[in-house]
Length: 397
Ligand SMILES: [Zn+2]
Image (cartoon, rainbow, N blue to C red; front, side, top):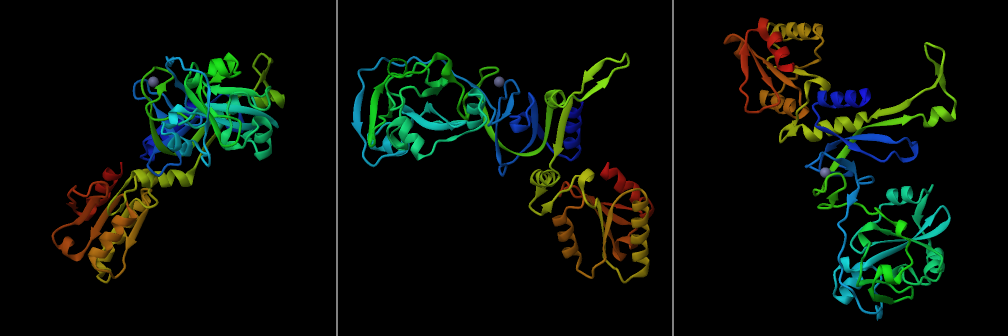
């Protein structure tokens, strides 16, 4: 918990709106793990959020609840010839019914053994959930031979009704519980079956209905029953509470004050530094360039020296630079012989948190110009050189 809170503070100081999100612990193990995500269109991970109760979880982990179904009874199974239609999309076009009318059936290789996995036709199997549910080391789609041996047909015509291997375990997503009138592969190439009632026609144990799909927008939050929303995020950090998984195995113990042997509790933590920088830029930029928050800006201040050849003006800039550096502020002095417009544009593009303009004209009017990068509409202030450092530090605070 202390680490979790420290991570929240670190990202807040980076100027980031980072969301702690429940995550799968993967191969590292342990029971609790949180990823820290920064929301961004360019994010690599989908995250399910519930605005009502605050639930947030990576799509690998996000759970959903399903309402009990009330499908109308259907007649006897009929075989339909579906030549050259392999995917659900193709068969659904061919038969003129929506994808949700189908049961998608896939043969998985689960630690070397075939398992048939069924989900609603317009849904995707969540391999991570499947792996946990089957308590398996490895799950992957079966190869051609295993599919043929299990089903009796090729991948496009696999289904849960009388597969070639009658003993194959069939597991179904909970959304299919009570499903009737569905279309499934016939376990015979180029054929499908319609009017399938899963409970009536398939050999699925009650305990083999489970949450096995990737959640999507509008699914029901497992915690509170309100709809979930899917957003994209960049993972910038991850905390794992490993507990005693490894320390028990390694017998890593310590003695308490009263000399009792105790197993150590372990955690592991990481921040993606490069990703965090990317995420800062993603969340903190405008049309002119980057807007660095002071805490993570490589250089917080740029001094645009407009008349570098004028010794009096250069001296003011140099004194200010020294004063700021002595106070621990990182400063770049732009003393290139460029037009002011070019210097201002470059300063905006690079994103220095504060821009200071030192020029002969300004000094003649009594000061240097100080301006924060964060708000382009914020007026610059003219301050006397002796007061500039204090004004800059106030903007950086
Ligand atoms: Zn909720």
